[in-house]
Each structure stands twice: as C-alpha cells, then as structure tokens.
Length: 379
Image 1 (cartoon, rainbow, N blue to C red):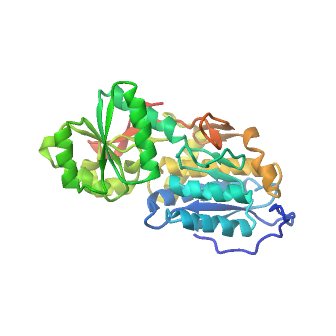
Image 2 (cartoon, rainbow, N blue to C red):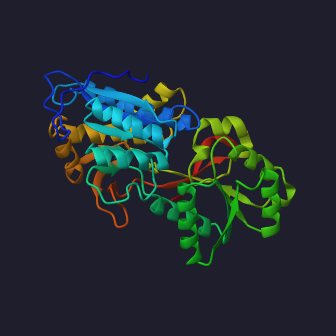
Image 3 (cartoon, rainbow, N blue to C red):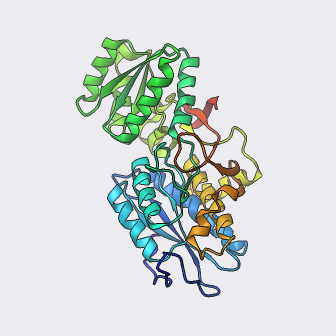
C-alpha cells in the first residue's frame, strides 16, 4: 500500500528534526517501481522485503520504543519522479530513504538525497557511479556492477566462451555493463560485439548472430519486451542452436519470465545475490516472504529486508532525530542480515559507503524443471 502523506515533523533550518514526540513513528521513505515502465515485479518483491522487516522491527520494540513507519512512493523507473519523491519525503520529515531497483533512477535519487542532506540506503541498484562525487550520506547493499559483472565474465570464460555478442538498448546502465565485460574479457582473449537493439528487430538480430559466429548472446535489454521476443526468435532459429543466451541483469529471476517463456526461458544464466547456503535468519525470512508474495522470493526481496534491518540499527543510535548523525553511522554499523554480516566500507572507485560484498551467484533455470534454479558459478 502507498502510504498517504502525513503532516511533517517540525524541522530546523539545517534540515534535521527538532525532536519527535514520544511514541510518534520514525518514518523511512521507500522508493520502489510499482508501475510500468518500471520493472514492477522487482518493485513488488523489494517492497515485500521492506514491509516484512518493518513488521519485525516493530514487533521487537521499534526504534527506542517508537514504531517504524514506511512512506512508499512509486518511481515507475522515472528519474524525475524519483527526484520529486525525494523532495516530498524530505518535507515529510523522514529520517532516511530506502530502496530502488533501477540504477539510473537510484542515481537521480541519490544525488537529490545528498543535496538535501538526507541519508539514503540503496537496496538494489548496482551502477558504480551512484553519485558523481564521494558522499557520506549514501550507502549501498547491492554489489557494484564492476564487481558482479566481472564475476559473470569469469563464468563465461570458464564455460569456454570467447566470442560474446551483446544485444543492448541505449542506457547508461547497459553501456556501463558492456564496457565492464569488454575490458575484463579483452585481457583474457575474449571479444565483445555490440548489437544495437534500437536499430534491429529480433529477426535482424538473428541474422547478425549467424554472420558473426558468436557463441554467447547477452540480453542487455528490458523485460518483458524486447527480451521475450529475442529469446523466442533465437531459440527457434536452427542456425543458432549452439548459442548460449545470458541475462546478467537478472531478468529470468522472476516468475513472469517463466510464465511467458516456459522451457524456452531456461538455461539463460543470470546474476543473483544470495549465498550458496542460507542461514537460520535467511530461512525464516524466506518462508515469511514466500507467504507474503505467494511465490518464491527473489534476491531483491531479501535485499529489501536487509535494508530495513540495517536502517533500524543505524536509527537506534539517535532515534532518527538527526540526519547528519544517521549518515555518520554507516562505517560503524554491523548487522547480521539474511545473506551474511553487513558492514560498510570505502571501496576504490565507488563514491558511496559500500557493503563489500554481498554474495554473488551465476544461476539459471533448470531446463527439466523451469521453476527450479541451478547454481552454475559463485564469486
């Protein structure tokens, strides 16, 4: 549910709260994409994790006896909507921001939050340059793209792939991923050929692949379209029977992929940020998420839960009354999350406080049982 605006707490001129009354809620602003053109299924899973963790925090006594409250805003994967939501949530007196899945949207939100002095814990976006300049106000749980996509490139090399084609739409995110793959593969004798989806139909793409003799095709594109049409076209082209398709951004993780493609959507490796063996907390949370979602939870749902677990620990240091003190707590926090112990540090090339690193897997759907996953590689 999208919480309607509530009257803001009084604020000082420096943007920090004047001090909430006893028993009043500690508010966290949640940025999620719940409608198209955003990846609404990912947004739904992220929100389920956020909401479940808020429930658990409140059942355990809240923040120094005050309940945690989530103010949810739909970004629809639109950077301008995200910026407007950050402005609104700041006026409403939230203690911090959480969430967002789409990297370009998260980058816009992070820049605005930094300008307003509002702490932001980014749950899922991976773009390395989350902010243009180093900042103490923003932290991130998801691994940086340069880290996880190099692991994916190592998986391709280990599987014997040296001639890689990428079918990419125009985007800062996809361009960054292509550059990471090209640089990493080139040092190991691999090549990357870019195929521009803004100029190619799925049929045209198949012709290009047949001519170039690539052994792997990576789908750097939106879901469900054009990704679904590309998968169907490649699968049904006899000339391309030996080509392996991959989707490092994780499109096959979600149930909609399996529902639309069935067995045609299996054996397409993607990145997933879960440990090979999940601990007791992860198992408990996973069961609760499955009940909430009525389907298997994705790694994005676990990211949502861990986001609130971290923010609750950070906010307990000052009751959410001082945004500067909240932001200053990133390097001191240590929280047992669903996927391991979470600590933040400064990582070379990353401008925000970073959990280095969340566990990384390369996974696909089992062709014999498309509702099951196979772990192919870990990093």
